[in-house]
Length: 240
Image 1 (cartoon, rainbow, N blue to C red):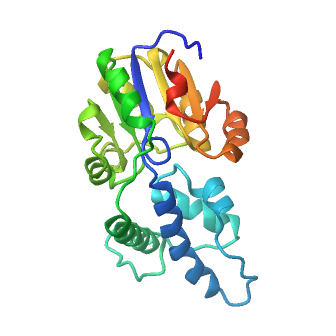
Image 2: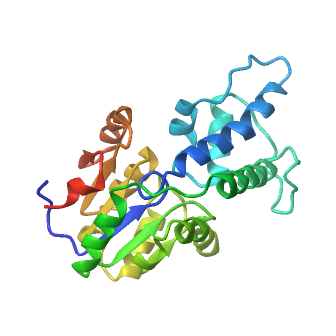
């Protein structure tokens, strides 16, 4: 693939670097299905992979909860950060989801896609600075477990986004902050995302080249529709 010149690389984590999407999907399913079953007088439809892709994938945790509940015409009080995981609030569901993900992460571990390490090494050898951007608040744990942390000069995750009050995807704030910390304007950065919300954020931020990676072929259409400049199936396609 012929790419325009770029001076820095910005990568999403879940679904681009690591196969943790399957863990997130399982955690969201374990969170939402018991909740949905308890909705008296409502037609029960389980949480699906399509729901995950459309309403949750790539978004900050609480934003994903709000988006999915709205899709089912359901609502909950926002609650507060001090709510326990058993509380029937947005904040409570968010805590419960994180607990479920942590349990799955401890049990299943982190799997890195086969094409990732060779491509990170390729960029590192060419002295291209790299950033990882993710809405996850477990990013450091995941990157360390996957042996990836040392490749990145910059990490913009859910914890930093909350600290700096940055809007999550599909807004471009976190990507723009990563570019700023790398010392390059967005126009000089290559951005790789697997989620529709992430591609939309990259386009809003006017990044030089926004690439969608469809680890599953059925993801490609949504990434193209979101505005990806190109859609690939493996990171190795980015090597000249």
